[in-house]
Length: 279
Image (tube, rainbow, N blue to C red; front, side, top):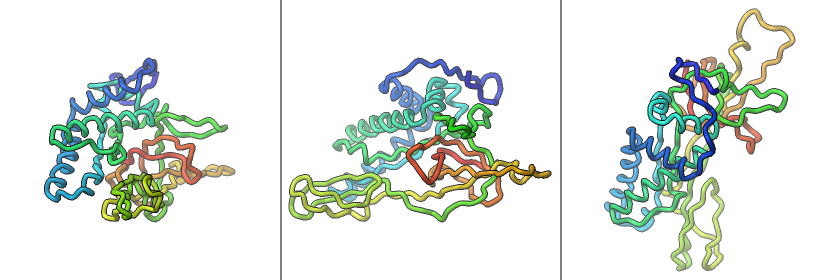
């Protein structure tokens, strides 16, 4: 059993059968419709429609739709324990389910407004799991090359962080040679080649979407407790924290509880944070 330390009602079984991607997307859609998340999706797509109708510029149909969706732990227990289990055991799979489910809702809204569907790469639906209490079974403790691949938690003291760096989420490109073609790139600023004439394309600079992030070094609380343990070396856990994943101010020496997931493809950090809060 996966047990979160928040009372007997907070027990979520880990014996959930394997679901199809379609079923997972329907779980996300159902939860959105049962909470205020649906209004957030409709509000973001509504602003996209209003902006295009106001300007009537073709390039505004390539603009991004950004939104942040907070999946509340208590509401998940009440409405969809299966969805909570998916988040805990398969956060990356859940992230894909959020992406395609929200895209379906946005596409329907645009269709009702008389607009063509956007490219899915124009949608940036950031999610957070908020309200998850400290759970010993989810603690990220890499030992003997054994790592938890699902959702993990890190509790500790902020020992250091990097200056803000910029992550490119989306860039829009056009061909200036008369081909009238466009291209959307994610996480890259290199000019693509036009699929029509093979010439380098030019970027709509105003439509570039970026987000800031920092790399945090989190030490366990035992690193500053007294009496100190001799012969013990405390190594910080390195976590990437993107701007959407927190609301509180970062202060060196303060304690935080971070929820995230392991990123094996990165060489500069161990966890990707999906929520940070002070404790």
